[in-house]
Image (cartoon, each protein chain N blue to C red):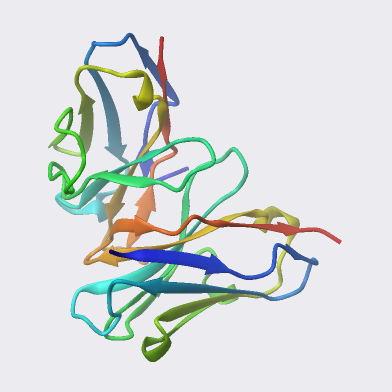
Length: 111
Length: 119
């Protein structure tokens, strides 16, 4: 079982907003300040979308935003587009023996 | 522009040792705060972090695979090498290397290389 729990799938229609959750099941994530989100299209490498909970790398659309509450981090996509259909992984730093953990990923289907 | 590329065998036999090389450009692994990590992804499954080496030669490994992994860097060649011993069919996966900023932000990824373990 992963230290980060994500729902297996979510779906939404174009133009809608959708939110992904990522819940830490271990206190090793500390205050959960080092959460990252990655987007992965089939056959491609993951792409960093959000880091340190809510920061967007240069070039990432401002339709993507991140937040957290306690041990649950969230990624929100506003104005859903067909190109957003992908698998989204959360990741966190931990202060345990493994400094990096990934969630199981959430597959986004754009209806 | 930061780029990374993985190279190594596409097919290994069970019990063999896998050696993968990550060749990168656009950054130096001697710069404070920089690291290179290895992540793998079995077909149709989730990402799994394997190992990470930082600019100061600090090395971290996945506890479940630690006994089988070794990560090294050659700063002059801009390369990071990962070796994994005693390969098994369950190790069949796409292996990615990634540029990482402390503590564990993987901002740039290689394209990945599929390694199949089969006799």
